Length: 397
Image 1 (cartoon, rainbow, N blue to C red):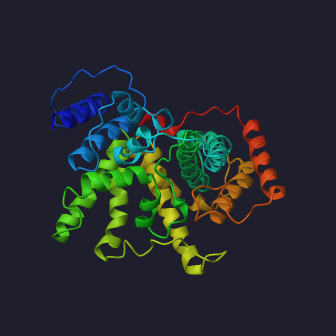
Image 2 (cartoon, rainbow, N blue to C red; image 1 turned 30 degrees about the vertical axis):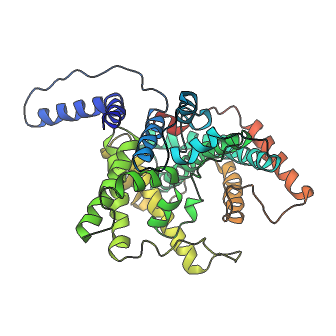
Image 3 (spheres, rainbow, N blue to C red; image 1 turned 45 degrees about the vertical axis):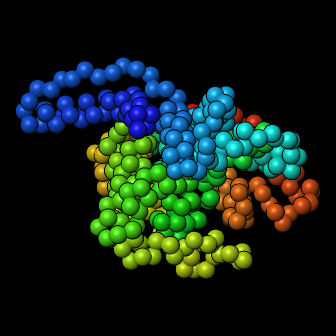
């Protein structure tokens, strides 16, 4: 209990102290009281949320008797601060990574080649797509009052693509790098934009965080056992904590709340486990029903990303309100059309490999005359676009 309190206390103090102080001060002002409270002026430690959760998983896994306490301080330090995943995940479990650290590892050629492919795919998503999307997204969100609804809509879509390629791109690089050293990290993304409902989306998006909250918070709270009220309460807690984990801003809390509201109909109708298989399994194309479900889910997620990307709740509401106007049919402006072929490559490759671990797996293609030109093309695109130099979005979390 002392160790958990210490870990969580440091995280809350460093990351959320100013948020609570400012929010409380604003509340006092609204009721006519003076409440100018001093805030902290400190630099947020890089990756504090991630390595705090790593440390907590070690404590919880010992408490639940999933592992024995390690007596090697170097092994423990390596688990907490393993460099590929330190700043943006995946969020590892002690029961998964520590045993790999403690045993002898040998070079595996097959795993290393696959790791290099995953690194290449992650770099393509980050440098070619996410960083170039960021240019349009930043300009549109910072000046949304000056653009028609069509541009605002495409700006939100571009942000959905940006944050996915940025975050999953980092995860691919981290997982691929770890594989070169003989480590198998937890999967963090499973092509979430092919989901057919919000429940499936959350089983495929930031999977290491979702399962962390499920195992260490949702289930200890009672999970779905007991009354319907308890299940609904626990679900809302998970989504709100997930939103709050992302940052000290009401927009993140609103983002989590919005996902909880979208999730509720599935939970109450007991259809949240309807789509657990791979979409269009055994078929090249989805059915019309699957296509419309994927499109509808994607649009719902895009709508929530507006709240995530906005600086304030007021900006998010204003941005959304402006989308639903007559100018939605106007010709969009400030959109880089040259990005569209690369986005097409992203979705085509990931659709082909939707049953695999990443977008360059191509399990049924073994001819080098096909695969090597693809690798060189991606490498050239990465080098050509390498000057963008946008920081990873999740570095701030």
